[in-house]
Image 1 (cartoon, rainbow, N blue to C red):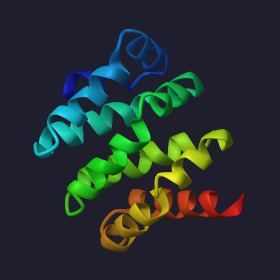
Image 2 (tube, rainbow, N blue to C red):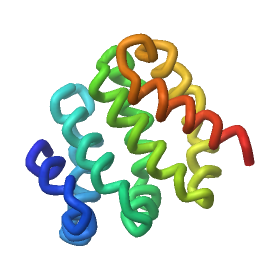
Image 3 (cartoon, rainbow, N blue to C red):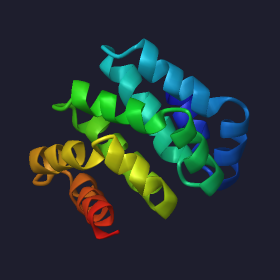
Length: 140
């Protein structure tokens, strides 16, 4: 998953990786290796990078990406890297207004609030993106 995460960084690569099965590979890793912190962090990092395009946002959402991301965040609520990657992934998904109801129905706000409370003092990305995400989820 680390290699997948790294390949998915560039703009053109995000779509190519997703079209080549990257979303399914990352989600599969999240589901199959729930207890492995390193795999969870890298798989969420790959989703984070791929979630930068609209096509990928919908693909991630349609393939239970919201549920898998929230599951990893709940399971590893003390792991800063998992929380950061999860928050930024969900934030990217929420930039598509039509996906916000899916985030709400899965209980994303509660999980994001825990991450922000736990890491806001040590991680500005979690604080900023988490608060922005909470605002998006409560404004519609």
